[in-house]
Length: 188
Image (tube, rainbow, N blue to C red):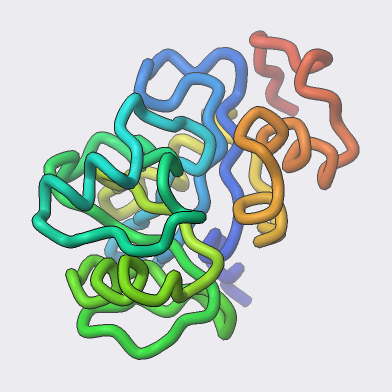
């Protein structure tokens, strides 16, 4: 019987201390989709200098919800950094949404930003510029090289914790303290 390939959709990827790619060093990435064609995700712990006020001004949408002003825009990954993406809960009904399970959505259409600016909905969201992408087999290869640890994601870590607590909280799901990780990988 052939083993089922790993599917990391809905999981966190925790960059190991030995991660050489500066785009991913010390990152926590949420995997939105993983299949035979590759994978895509969004880094959830790397805020940029840009905030929502600046982003909405640049795309000519008036941000009318005061409580959202000043929220950070995140570096979601090195792919399409000139485009905005929204990781949110609930999934909702937007023009271009990739559902991630029953709870989360990853949306790239303008209509979600218009709703956010007008109504503050969806209530739980993270806006990023860019996303992380892997070609077919690339993520599996990186996992075999101990570049990442993986654990089932908890949306509370993304939406309910301050950015500096997200990586340690994901590590805690594995029962590991990030400070105790070695940058030397071992293979059995």
